[in-house]
Length: 141
Image (tube, rainbow, N blue to C red; front, side, top):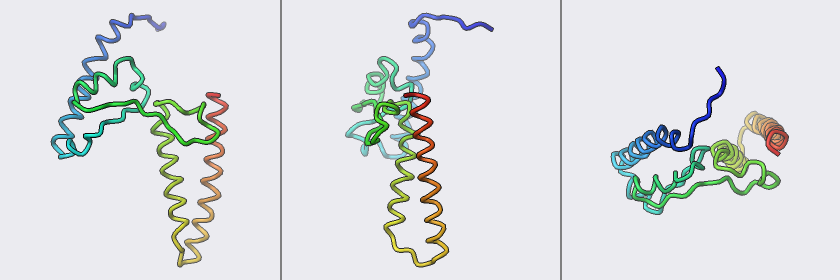
């Protein structure tokens, strides 16, 4: 089937109720779990849909909290390639993995077998990160 073109207004009429419902569910879950008071400083939204016009404002209206759109940061050499909200989850997972890897290397290892495995993981993970960086730069640069 050939692609169709629809107006922004029609698209908004379709998407807005689902987004409202999503933020209402988030608000209900924050209340249910008791986390509502713990996020008084605000909420950060990420992902491609966070860039939709009016998304942060709608979230603020429903959640009654400050809301901002998050972007990945602290990415030497990759700032222009993956610094968008749509990449935040992937970049966050890579940064989390790197941080945990560095933290685990700072702890003394008792067992030589574990040390060898950690060294292998370091080499493997570094290679994966280099390949990922190259792919992202080639695909989006």
